[in-house]
Image (cartoon, rainbow, N blue to C red):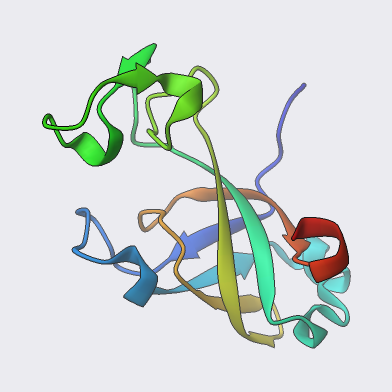
Length: 127
């Protein structure tokens, strides 16, 4: 499988902030994918699938939230970016959609991260 970048994260974040929930990000979509945003603004939350493009290593165990006081868990039992496929998945608040820019709040991705897909959060399916 070869993933295609559909958008890029623009938020100015280059270091891990104290609280990702407060971060506002713009997902700047490639022009050829803009038609796919039709009626996205009817949703309050969306899933964002993105790439941990700055992460180079892969680990099979990690301490949750990089806290050495917490016991190690397997990488698939964590949210660590040191995963084999470097894919992130975050449920974010949808702030707005304007032309080729989707504004969200709470995305834990650094500036410049590739976005591979988005999907609406639907209570009857995702809860």
